[in-house]
Length: 148
Image (cartoon, rainbow, N blue to C red):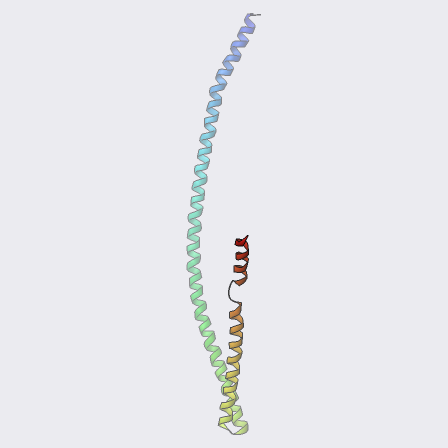
């Protein structure tokens, strides 16, 4: 039973086991070190991506403000053009009434009535649209959600 071959085989197995254990420990430590390196790299990448996103948001904010300012200027110019166009239309209608009937007062009255009709239409639409502003359905939904 205890022949030299079995003893040598046992010693060889024991040697393999003893050499495998430190090797396994080293592998385990290497894996942990790699995981730590990867997580640090991942954290750095996310931090870099966050900084880039922040810079992008700042740049887009500046561009949006610039665009908003330009839109405001363009809308002012457009509104001025509409006012001048409307004044021209009222003037033309007033002059046409004066030319047809020879009465300045009829021309003024017609232009005034057109202006009042336009203002009434604008007021009606403004009231209609202002009733659409708000979050009444959202608030109602939130009340139902929190009442559960």
